[in-house]
Image 1 (cartoon, rainbow, N blue to C red):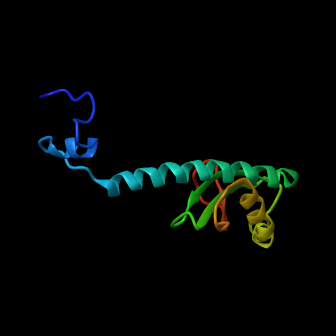
Image 2 (tube, rainbow, N blue to C red):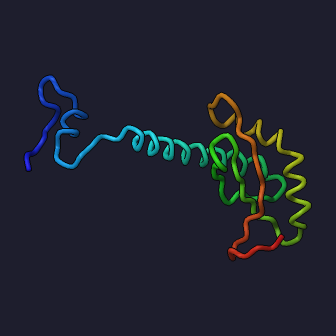
Length: 128
């Protein structure tokens, strides 16, 4: 197998890659990988913003994930033992516009994502 040190004169790296046996450039896979990486970066920033916004209420955001895409986020929140889960989730839903504004100020996007809240359970069980 020949070593490539860079694109050959007059040919792009993509063209050279496509000429290798069994190789084909897949821009759709590259786009998916970039989208996943950017989505993870946004999720971390959104999680930090939500943790700061919810610190006064003794709530901690465990995870933020796209559901089903980056336009809507699923936010998993640890609920303290002394508070009712349904009451906390209802309060978060009522505060959703304020929390969306906090997220919007932390990230640069055309639209702030919608937020959906679910309780995070440390042991992986379901207690609602």
